[in-house]
Amino acid sequence: MIWLPYTQMKNHATQLEVKKARGSKIYLKNGKTLIDGISSWWSVCHGYNHPVLVKSIQKQAKALSHIMLAGFKNDQTYKLSKRLCDFCKMDKIFFSDSGSTAIEVAMKIAWQYFINIKEPNKTKFVSFKNSYHGDTTGAMSLADLNSGMHKKFKKLLLKNHSLHLPRNLKELDRFEELLKKKQDEIAAIFMEPMVQCAGGMKFIDPKITKKIYTLAKKYNILFIADECAVGFYRTGKKFGFTHSNIKPDILCIGKAMTGGMLTMAATLTTNKIYNSFLSDSLDNALMHGPTFMGNPLASAAGNASLDIFEKSNYEEKIKDDEQFLKEQLTCLSNNPKVIDVRIIGLIAAIEIKGDFDLMVHLRQEFIKQGVFLRPFSNCVYLMPPLNIKRKDLKKITETIKKVLS
Ligand SMILES: *Cc1c(COP(=O)(O)O)cnc(C)c1O
Image 1 (cartoon, helix red, strand yellow):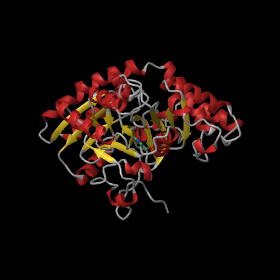
Image 2: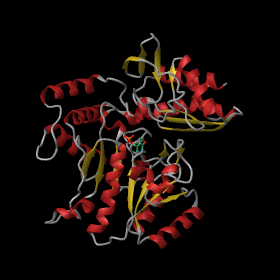
Image 3: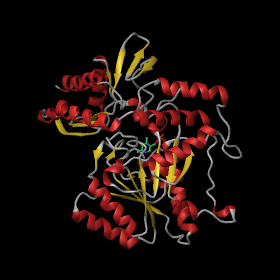
Image 4: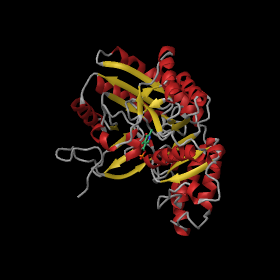
């Protein structure tokens, strides 16, 4: 029998039985239709079963579903590597199979970069409280291990610095002091630019991100942007870091990278980092290679997804949607149970007073009203497909207002 994610299996709610999904709609076996407010963990950016994606995968499956990346070159994967480097304005791309793995790879690249350039004591990472970088061992090490779901694994994990995100100049000064003191041991700063998603949809002032980036540069520390959640226009710009006008040393992407069709992620770097791995010895090379790395089917989905991005004007559309969400949802802050309403791009977060049981209750209420949302901790949020129609978006906002009142 199956074991479900983040679930107490002893008493979990019944799973909704899905028949099919199209665009922003999920069709259940019981005849009910749900409008999807969270794009299957933020991955299905062009809606479910987008015909361009389906066609691309079908065609690729007939020709070549999988071939290993060691020893073989296939067109889809090489084409995608070039296109994603252009899209992300990075120089080199290393494929993997999930966001967590992309983070592990980023850790290894940062760590080994400093070995390669003969600064082997730079072995520690900095991350921020409320950030989420994945569930594998290295990625868990970046979590806040004094609270949060990975706390019990503390003894297993790497000792890193999980810091409060600086919010003002004074806190930035204190942050700088730490970097200055520990610059000889810190390899990299991991950050979710613009929005810390799984950690509670916490927004970050892009000016603060810029400052953190500048300090990283000043102290010879790599800046690693984890864009698994907000990359590909979620916040209205191409990436979260685009708001800060910076260029990360290492970039992790996942989730929406294949339009949410197949599992694939990537770690991108600059030539400067990549070149440090070049030598006559395998010892300097990056010794990593997931079995399904660069899978041609997933690459076909990735290429088709980029085709859609090139043909659509998501920036414009999401700007309008953001305005609409503000008009619709800002009034919720008058509700005495609501602590905060935050909106950027196609993300809206409504923090409320309430516990886990209330969230479970709310989930069921939303479903009754024909909307799929999955509030967590104390946050009702929406992150629908980027191309969601206005009518469907309105149905979601009206349902939220109705249920919360
Ligand atoms: C989802 C997510 C990850 C992990 O990705 P998986 O594909 O679930 O392993 C890492 N970082 C961020 C910011 C994420 O949202």
